[in-house]
Image 1 (cartoon, rainbow, N blue to C red):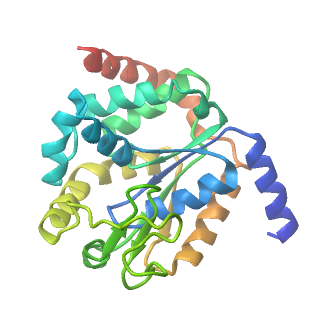
Image 2: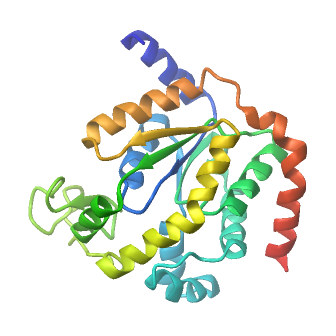
Length: 259
């Protein structure tokens, strides 16, 4: 694909309401790639992890329920996540397109998402899986630091800040997240393999999944993700034909969430 073609597709993406899911284990680089796509295409970046941490900070009822689970590296129940996401999808910025980071994390969440979007005739364009081995994830996350103000993520070896301990963007003191310790990371990975890999298989089965080797340099991964997103714009999503099969599933999950 030529540079001219890439630019044309990027322009097309800006005109469309592009809907993308980034999926993969913790530490695979979802936040880093999401930040690039958000800026390039003007998407709403929806990170359930960030949303849950905000709920914890606000000490909301949801935050209180989620805090202990998150500290132990466990998943927040589907019903709570779906309640939170249903509210988020009602906000106006979502109409311009969105990028999901950290959702869905179970097959039930994936099926609910598909049904929710199909009900509004707004199917996903693609699901990009960032694939990384467990030992590399442990190494990455133990050395990860993040900015509490802007959310920018650093790695002390591969992507350090210009000034040690301070964010390049706003000078805030970087923090080491409470759950970025080896024991919790390995628990999170076990949960991912048990509960999130089935949703990856689900997206593969409906023809939306594309895989990227996330062990490559950040810029190379960014290039591959970019090509996948642009290529997805030239295809017709198979989810339009799945509307009848999935809408009843979403309604049943919605009733459970309200109950």
